[in-house]
Length: 503
Picture 1 (cartoon, rainbow, N blue to C red):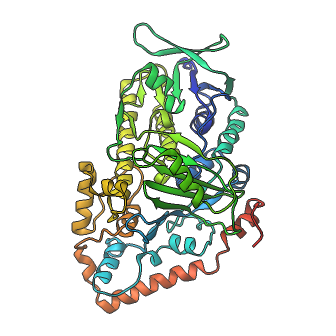
Picture 2: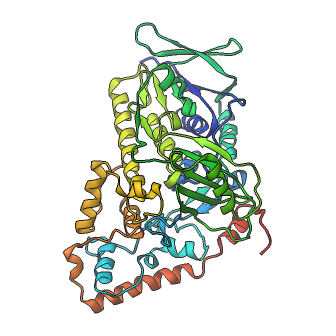
Picture 3: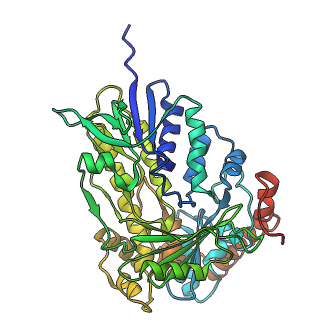
């Protein structure tokens, strides 16, 4: 009989969302193969303003065996059907990036080609009326999709300061050891440079075989210790600061979506939770001062402030290698783009999934490290292009900021995607990663990039046949949404008591 391999000692540096997501997932799926210690310092604290997510978070919650109602009550969560964009393509424009499709393909041809033909011929209505997500959001309706349905999906909006502690309870209850305190020194192997132990301020020494750096922008292990290079993307993603401030809700209405409003030097978020509204202004410090950004946010929020404005600094980019030696960077230590499409928690989740798949039994293999870095790089690069599209696809010329992003040279990879769309209404395909065809279609159309041509197969139906088919799609969407309950009503019935003003 072969001997059972020794349990891998995993040391996670940093709590918060990234750290406790990593700990919870590892103990849930690899608890028999590893011993997990998480080090965090209450004194250092966490960023804790990210409140909006993508639908992938649902599967993370399910994979842990968590009850959705309990999770939502503990984190004051609401449901999210998409992101509602205002003033991006031009001042006065508005569209929803939905977590769902537009219509359905016909004869292997994506639905938007038929809509485009009809629109170019001067007939038909808005593309948004063919998306069940859009119509639900417009009427503040919500019910989960039926089992097996692919018409739409949903995510959560929650209080990030509560999410980490919620997962901490889960993880420590299943065997994760939590160590409180500050790391003051990192020990490395003198020959290969691997991290061997973390020395604490109180003299303790925490040894490990695999270290996960969730120390945020400090990147104590991957950056300060291993000196892994940072690839800067600020030439395309100009925003480098955010000022955040929660406020009381002015209405009992709770929209099932994140609101995003373009501002003179960036954009502003509005995230409705059960007990308050999260607000923030993401901006370029080269185009507006911290004080002016804070005043702009204060002037835009809907209700009394619940805290003073808080300024956060960041830089857009990623590590050239997120797994180096025996250190895996997860979360902000690995990279950060910006909050525009709620991708930060998704990138944490993706890194965790890759780590679990490539988890080393014994010494770390170069092949596993290389594959982790390949997948991570592809994720960041594709998301980067999608975010840049939101800024570059505009006719706004009302400020220095919008003039710059409108006229800047975009990465070749994005230029090729945009050129393909403009010529043929085709969306560049990839088999893995985030933001598939409906997402790109929503931003292209929503921000006014109308293609010159479309798939010739969309010309096969007669005009009358096409009009009738489009009418049926819109009627089916309306009929599906009409009986749905109000979002706030659904939350009250199924998940929590909402602390909101009476209607």
